[in-house]
Length: 241
Image (cartoon, rainbow, N blue to C red; front, side):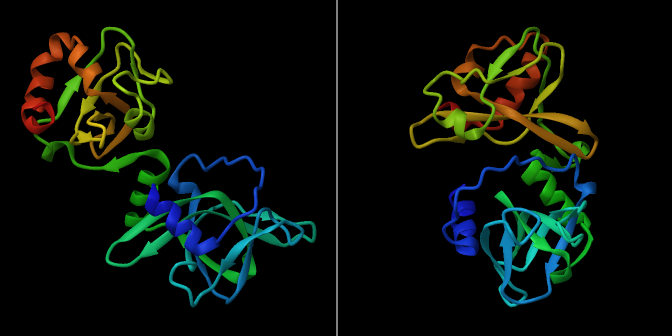
């Protein structure tokens, strides 16, 4: 999160407060890769020159040149199309996609667009939908469980880190659905252990649905799935020392 904030400030500087609803496309199929083709292009808070300037983009600036955009442009009052930028693409040793919040708008005659390539779509999936692309067949030791009753969990990692031994009850694992302990737990400076929880979408995709604190994990009755969960736990012994 700190890296995201620092990168955002580097690109846009200090931003004015802009009230705007931030809806995102329903899938990466409705997103585009966008390259800025001009220099010193103003990025606006809306689709038109009457909106506040949020920052600048330029083809010569590696930190403000490549973006993910909503595939559907919006027309301004003169009938000129604008694209809404929803993420920045950073390309150094490895490509990364960072969500822009708030999003901003750029006029279509200053850019070129194309469909997202496979790697870009995978990273956008992770950024916007918490979806990871993996192969279940090559993931031994995954802990699978199906709750007999709803389990309150933390919706985000931030919630979990500040839960102080109890989850913030703003999310839940519904009874009867199957979930997985797949990723390794992580430990906050306070000592709180957080366990990412995932749901299988298909044989190649898994989605993070929330976090469970160690205290909640230790108090759960996993029933018929107990052996599967305990086998996963044994693969990560240091988090229970």
